[in-house]
Image (cartoon, rainbow, N blue to C red; front, side, top):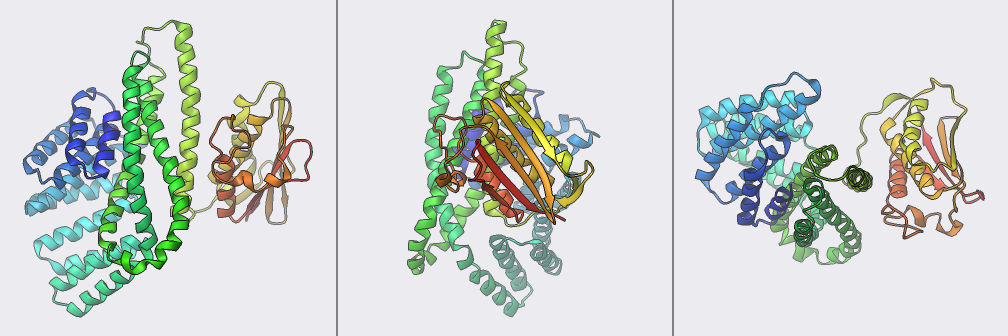
Length: 507
């Protein structure tokens, strides 16, 4: 897994020879009959290295080897596994389609596109995959010289594209089709529209330029962690290796967040230098695409490694005394829980900052959300602390809202209370006034000074520097509350400890 992460870091920096070396090592030592998700990801990105270096012979060999791997994988009818099963094949057929188009093997490309359509549906018709499939139809039509069909798919792509950067690319692609059809006026109009969007994504391009520097720094951190891994290989090698890899990725995410804060100040200066920066837009756009690819790779590998860590916890063939094994398992489980919480917080913040859209609301029972949040923290509440829930709502009270996000806010508040309350009580209260739900979490902990009522909601803020965590829980809670149109505040009049009020408008 460390080879896979390191290869992806090299790929994001266009260091293709080193990336290929890491991916080869991964494939050579990956155990047979193991889970296919991680190795499928490696084949996908390994192809990208070979495509950039135009190593046609190696690409042909890789696709054959990849096809054999998928052929040996038995089909599944399990609904829970079907999406992953289809996703693994979809990655292969997309790479094969691109290769066949480059070789002008249009008959085989047409057959491969049929497989892409099939597995896109089996994977759940994810909107990103739908758009990619539309692009594949357009590319095939262009290669066949069927420009009328290509134009239809180019226009369908524009209907599905909402992101500014992707819309600019879609306009540019349609302009090429118009040019092939001899409709030069419309081609020129699309090019002008695409060019007008460049300034709209200027700040995003500048952010990606700084992210590229972050990746180079993160690579050095990753190599240091790998050296440390070798020195400690006598302890549960697999689990430690994957945990260190997760830590390296965590360092990258934290540093990336801090750079983004500095970027807000830097953007003011960059605006005055706009005329100079415009000349660099083309290069920055390339760097943006690389950063997006690295972000997708990061998410895929984090999911794979989190699963592998959970498997390591149940390994029985390591020669350790039972007491020492239990101690290692407890430490790994606790630190894995903490790392997972931190990573989830960072990813939530990243998602909120990159998207302003909310998922569809749904009917939910308030008491069920409260019970789920309470269950998440019962195991970490001190034995000397009394925990109870008080609600004035009917047990079957139903609202139209976002149950997962409400659960996250309540869990963060309860975890915060459990962390600092060693004696006394923790109370979660629920009531409704007009069209607003009022959740409050009260504890008998050390309390928070009134002058810190806003400071504690800032990122990476901790009043006790020796306490566990990174100071992101309350930040995430307030971001979600505000995204839902509500508020999350500290009650400075409460004198028995700390009290947080989460007020949410509901239907």
